[in-house]
Picture 1 (cartoon, rainbow, N blue to C red):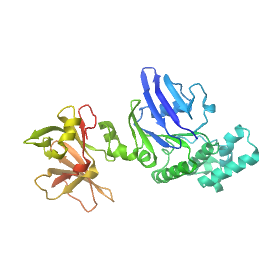
Picture 2 (picture 1 turned 180 degrees about the vertical axis):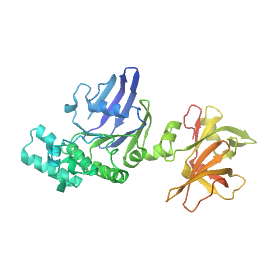
Picture 3 (picture 1 turned 90 degrees about the horizontal axis):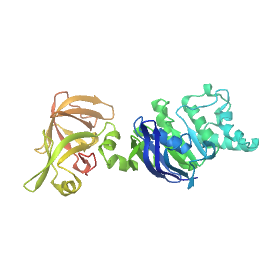
Length: 361
């Protein structure tokens, strides 16, 4: 197994800088996800590790060895793609064994390794079938088997679950995580799906325009976003953002959002030390807003805009001044459109960003 180090890595295509001076260290046996919107540079970064792209500048190290000049076949990495890329004329057994046959393994050794891999992936009974006789999930397991069987130093996975239906994708997320932990191979996983990233990863590198915006665990990314982009990208529905200004009144402090004022006296010192100006953006996640029929004087008046029942919960869209705020509520809370309600924020979980988009608290 091996660690991966990317050092000042840059890749330019014409006038487009796909990867911009990226530094990243991936621990041995770690499951790291490159997450971000289309065009953010995550797939290009993975292709640079694989050797499918040549860096414009910077270095790629695998297991402490500089591999910039090594072709893909000598980097000891295995890739699993969005399209399974199985040979349609070969059985599952032959597809899985293909990289071993190319390396001239003895037949008995090939059978031993394919059998062990099939048992790990629970596809022992499918080895004589061709890809057209397999479901999408079964084809995905065969593609994984072909990567696993050669015991590479690094797994590179480029949106491998995106072609599966929602139920199967949910199942395969858990299976991929279980398999990766069991075999302990360093894995770089590329996706635009935040749920995949949050549920599967040891750490997430969230990218935008070729730059890592934040690198951290699921908890760090979700609960302590470093800027507005991270806060808005992760979370479904996304975090609510409300422009406001920080004001001090008679020793107290408030956030003035126009339609309401929020007392932040307890956070005054932290805000003053972290903010670059008094103009801020208040961030609060939908699950951190309580919707009340009757409110106290400190609660925020709102009008129900639309209600979206989701079975296990209710998503309530609320009009607060000129802004639409989304709140999650238990299924028993079912106000009607145009009802007047009151909102209470969980003050332990609010976020503040200054006008440079950096997190203040």
